[in-house]
Length: 72
Figure (cartoon, one colour):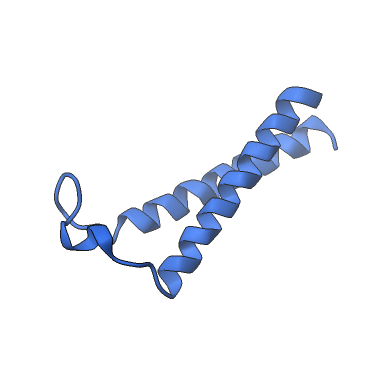
């Protein structure tokens, strides 16, 4: 894979990762450290899917970063 393709993929994954993180922060409460009621609840439905998608994006981003640093 040429370096430009890896760089474009890395930028796209970084943008998706930022969006996924911002969508998760939206529902966390308005206080400085979040709401106390939400601290010990389980994720369900769309929130769980978004959480797992964020973990997947982090793994893809780190993999692309390692490939970019090691081979290009």
